[in-house]
Image (cartoon, rainbow, N blue to C red; front, side):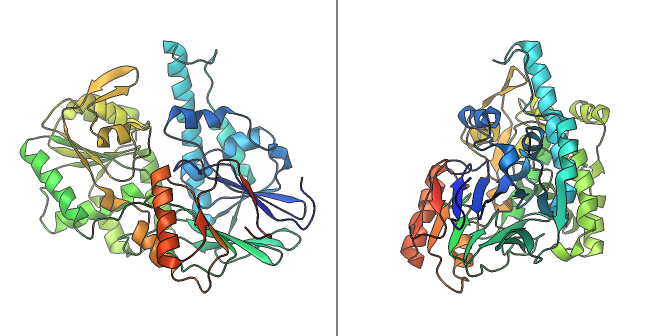
Length: 461
């Protein structure tokens, strides 16, 4: 542990990738981890999940989660299993969503390990998951939900406040005070024009800013993503085809349901069956209904949005969809084709040119979704090569992340210039592009930190 009165920040993840969000703060003998995410995408990144944590889990005093997506929360079960005994602070919405996401993550990892063991495709003998569903359930006992804007005491002159970030239910920016200094973490920033969620709160005064850069080199389409979705649906319906929409179960599925309901109401898409084939997305809908203060929808539109679809929970009903044929729409997880029921549908329908595959947002490097978006038409799915002849469309306008213009606009709201801005949580080209814009357009000091780099918060950069 470091000496007292020295405030440091160590970048344990999300520095050369858009996943694995992990930041370690140390001050006055207290260690706090901000986010505890899984690395996803390329194998060299995923392998980090199996390495020993860079510091002893038992030496950490508190964990703060910006939101429930697995690249920010998904390593918590392993951290607790390996010796972490402190609280995991989240907002109330994040707490509820983690109860869905973390056990499901453990379950999927167990399934993947069993498959790898059966096929002999793992270098581990026996093949082991990163953690199990039981590990995830046990880790939830550590969660301590807190209100937005209610400071959490972490140690002497050391506290944190959760501030609305938009993006998904419960998502927060986290403002940390370390004595006379402060660090502000964006988490994943939402959009000002999100049809579902409210925009992120303005940036408050801070010494050090740690920002995401998922869309740091891109801007969202000015308008028309709903129309582009309607065009895909209409083309496939005329062919009698199936529209497979790959969507994150929490956040993206809700936005897609909303837009499809609005398109149907306006008569812009045909009255064909819509299936929400994601038990997690179905359960998440009930959680969203419990937090009307965090989203824009009134109860009537919320109700009509979920009346649009046939909810598919059981494995048997999911398998029957692969025999049904089109025209129909299936919304299923995962959003980057990394696992889940969407892969079974892709194997069943991807080879037919009458069908369409819709990628509804960002695709991290190294995922099947990224390969498909880049033009690959052969994907490895459950040990088999699947030829993709279906129409493939990527709709980035449905992203729940602020784009580069949105991040810059949000930064302009700061009452004063941060001493330093660190750009993280983006692919290298996206992070560097945002760094240049921050320096040129705002005149701020900004740089991209290295993986495992440590900086002093209370010393000049």
